Length: 239
Image (cartoon, rainbow, N blue to C red; front, side, top):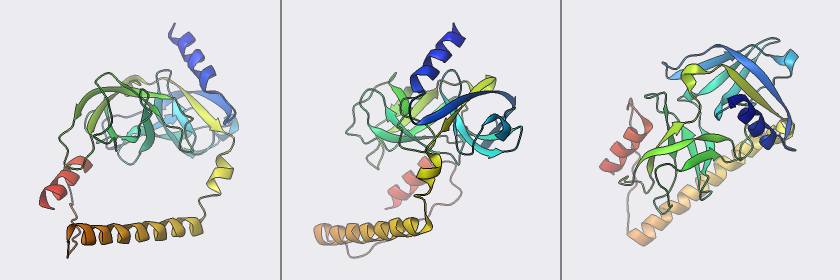
């Protein structure tokens, strides 16, 4: 039944944005590091491409990072360097999913404003606004949340549908338009975005100055905090 369900899900996501879906077996996996990597038994000769999304029969697993002729390495979702676009299935509220390096069963859903409606048990899926995954790939379900953040966003714990401790068969989602989309990542475009960000920052400072009477601005850097959440809370408590 599990294999039948997996094939059904794969058929549901194979659309015009995907060239193909390749299957592979896990030969190396870890869950006890901050930057976990998975190695599979398929490579470029099997049609595996860099930066392809990878899923298990249960949901999202990671992204292809390196490829040789016969093997490929995957940045696991249990890697503190990885952050993926995600949405609440019930409301389509956009956020991002990441891992804080602590519990291999629990991911963190970030950037969901307190004005959003959610509850324990809500499903989190991929948002489709990335190179890696089409919209609708399962990620996990909300098991806990805190609305007392000083930043105006929930702190949300998501239990992953994929069991990273027992990964065996994986599927690589090969997107046909990745090369064309990547061409948009031209250095000049990055510089333009950086300039726009600086303009918006200056405008925000002017609003704070004119509307709230602020006369000085400070930057607080928190170094060696255990998690990003802890660092933000420390900085906001000071500010």
